[in-house]
Image 1 (cartoon, rainbow, N blue to C red):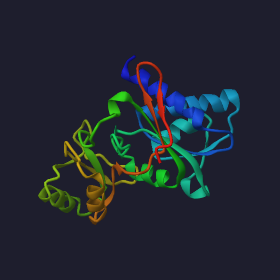
Image 2: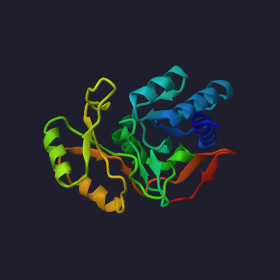
Image 3: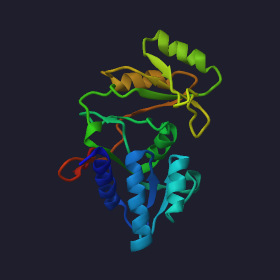
Length: 228
């Protein structure tokens, strides 16, 4: 199986956690794409009755086109479950997210959910976080000053650019500075430090947050439950 097949298998399996009548948070990314496609199929073909909120404009558009009922996150009083991808998951089920520059909205939705499910292919499972660059979302005003502070602290920052060399902007019109750390030995300490920097809106460390992980592998998706 190639990577996309593993992602698809994990995405399809995760929809089994969605029950009739739920309010569902839909994440962002390539694995989530397959999950939303399967959810749309069950809504259309099986009459699954759900309402959803989402973490990015592109997932919103995909879901609407599939006939999934979508609501603004401010218009729901609870979220039963959120299914999202991850860029890395370590041995303690801590994660890095934000490869798609949606980690601010992803964290807001996750923190307001009763249950969080991450869906990944097996390449995202690591012993220690950090090989994947850690995203931070920063406001444009003073962004160079924020960058300089991160550089002074030895965190190897780099503004994220697109294929045309233009600065990447999030759905909230902010910029992304990725930290090339290689290894994060103390993720909680780093998260606390980044939380305290004025100008950083949010970072991609998702700690003590996930309840269930679905991993696409060569046999069948592996489901790890009751993590927290």
